Length: 316
Ligand code: BDR
Ligand code: CA
Image (cartoon, rainbow, N blue to C red; front, top):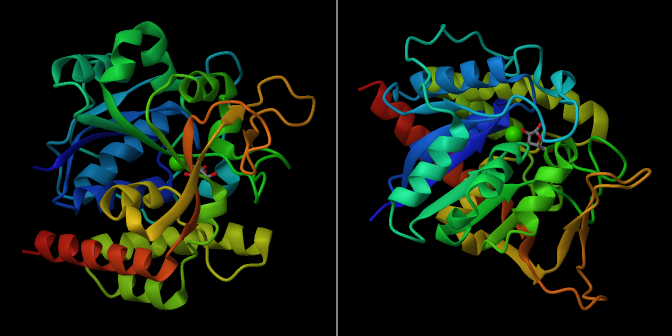
């Protein structure tokens, strides 16, 4: 039976590829997208989520708008990475499908209460505001979560938005703190992993040769590659968020350690840092499977395989 997941997202070109990979994978049953403010404000992230669903031929997939600001802070966005729309690189048609009337936090709570315990996993690939709000409001759902697999944080690579912090955690550290302390089964895909998952020219050109779906993926990658290559001097750009979906599909592509990870919420310079006890130098109990490596070539082979199949299906 396909594994049930909710993707909590702030699209975002790499969020978009994560959503497409999930929708292209028969092993996963995406129950809905819960959308949060992050890369750009909520009005744009929810619009982008609907555009991505329609690009994937899934106008039927419910999309819920969630929190429009972090729990205690002003929203920090990342237009310099993702463009003004959050999804720059290709012009997609205005979506016809409607947003669901229910708030994303209520969708998360209701779904976890309705489905049998430990049968729904959460895949957050943006700031953790929706998930933390749901846990705060309905603590009974925490033990019903099968697994959380999130993109966020960094240890060896340290920060991308500040010298110490990764963007998703930095935007809402109080929310991240709630999730990391929740006791839920947690796997973390940090920058340490995603910075190994760099696109190659060959892969982008393979995508471009497909139909509209592949062409969108190629154009999105071209767009955000410009930022990352200038910043890191690397060839290619990290496809952060799809690593979470790849982990659900093929966990053997990753290595990591079950360790203690706490979130810095009050640092003078380090707010949003994921303080990962990689070397187990404290006696703080382990709370996260903190990933460290990815088999990059197999990851891109998986993406190519699944996106090519979805693209072909859409073209009939
Ligand atoms: C994370 O921040 C966003 O800009 C990306 O979509 C990803 O989720 C990487 O730090
Ligand atoms: Ca994201």
